Length: 434
Image 1 (cartoon, rainbow, N blue to C red):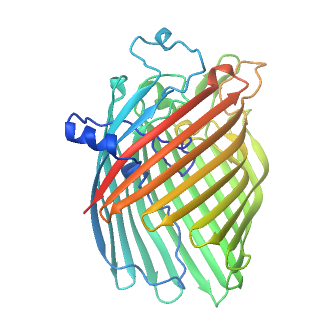
Image 2: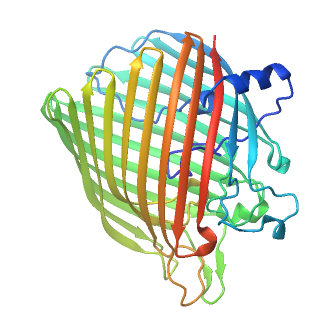
């Protein structure tokens, strides 16, 4: 489980469950240290590298271990006043979650070919809801390849295992979510200004809980694009994306009967990257998306999408990122339940010294579900509003040691009272690299 909202699409934050930590030494360490450390370690997203990019970094191989704790005052994302004992006697609304982590981070360069490996495994233990104890982790391996002076790309695969979030699951049982994917991409330089790109990704999502296995899915996504460099700091381009999704089974609606959630989706997007001087960058994209359920009478969607991001660096130690968007998306643990997301996010960061960094993020999002879910005849489509505020700090007292603190508040309003909630998280942790 993760401190960010449940992961969507290709993103995959993991909510933070708790490891088996009985040693007094570790308990003292957790009480003194602050941080998110090991599980905030991100897996790099796939993409293509320009042939004009800087030289690859030198060879490295780092191992790390960590320990941490998370306090969640509304673990099951229930409305205020909800009685969990009516569901099961062993469910507790709040919980303290501990984690032990070990992992590796390596990069090797050989004759302009770069290989990367990132992996970590986590043992998670809950103080009250011990039926949720689990093992989670992430792994990613990739090969950034180059052929001649114009052709480059990336091949790789990634894996993630985590406890599914309860925000979108009214069935309050342990559901370990497994995500597997492989990807390939390539780019070709046409002269000094034009670039052709192609990407493909195969992904699968599997639920551990038997009652959720009807939501198991396989998704294939292909993307073609072309880019043109107007100036050294300005580029424009166009992408076309197509995706197919197949789910393990149909859902049965009370009135309309079986609903086949298999779909195909296509999107055409134009984009612009522009530097407004040395301190400000502006990224803009806009396009049109179509979603079609060939074997179902509901859920089809077509409409405009867009995203704008402004990055401002007023000084060497500060940065401000402002983002606004409109898109069709879904949470990764509820992949078949899509909604139109309209929102905004503001995220300042401040790094007062080389060893201290701080961050703040506030977001607002309106979610209009498109009807690709089970509803009774006459029931309105789901409408949610999600607001969140998050603050974090990282301290590096010595080069191998990292301490972090993260605090988060999130609340969701909905036209379905059972889906409203407020939640507060506090996370402490420590990570040692060797």
